[in-house]
Amino acid sequence: MPPWLSDLVHGDVTSRERLCLGLNDAFDAAFGATWPQVTAGHKAELARYALDAAERGVVGALATLCPGSRLADGCWEVDAPYSRHVAAAGRGLVLLPTFHWTGATLVGDNEDQPLLVVYPAGPGTPVLPAALGEDALAPVLGSTRARTLRLLSDPLSTSELAANLAVSPGAASTHAAALREAGLIDTVRNGRAVRHELTALGKLLTNAAGQGDTFARKGAR
Image 1 (cartoon, rainbow, N blue to C red):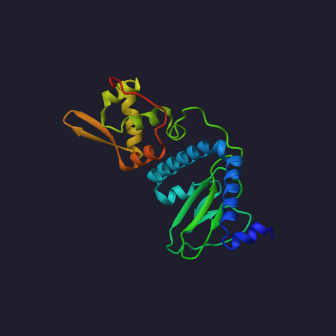
Image 2 (spheres, rainbow, N blue to C red):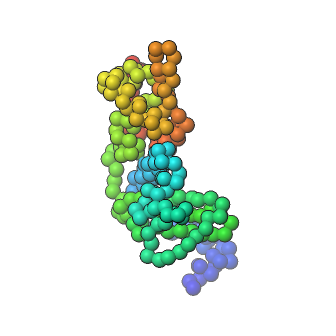
Image 3 (cartoon, rainbow, N blue to C red):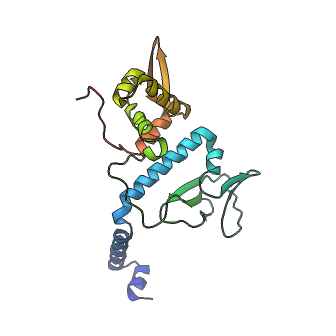
């Protein structure tokens, strides 16, 4: 054992600072340049899972969480090079997507703690740089519907939505209907007029995925 590690075990401050500096340098060298892309990937994965959960329910979303994932007789099965049975027993479940691992799903089973499932959600290292200004929601919803969702951070009528998207009212209505069916927006009728607004799930997705591309409403200063 190197002397500094022995000192660390005994609470030496200098050794602890040396370890922290080393960990920071290792992070910068391995992940620093691509960390913004990793963060964007996590946000896009959250959006994908939330949409699956809205459409299929939590159980259905788990079945399509990662390759080799399925439900069989009330048991969630995930392909792995080993056989292991884990009972969650009401402890809860933490899902952690990783963009630096492409192997089998990893399971952390610590007593009295939520069950941790780490699953590959990307191509592994190196993480490829994202396009400048790319909206994390666009790969999930499509660019027009992602922009529609962001525009509805304030309620809009169909005609107002069409004007901001530069599409016909019919096309705007079609995009709104798709988002409404996914549980991301509500449409409220007031007489002959209708207004579209975000649901709690829609707000969660837009907040989690950041601001995305900057855009302006027509007529806004």
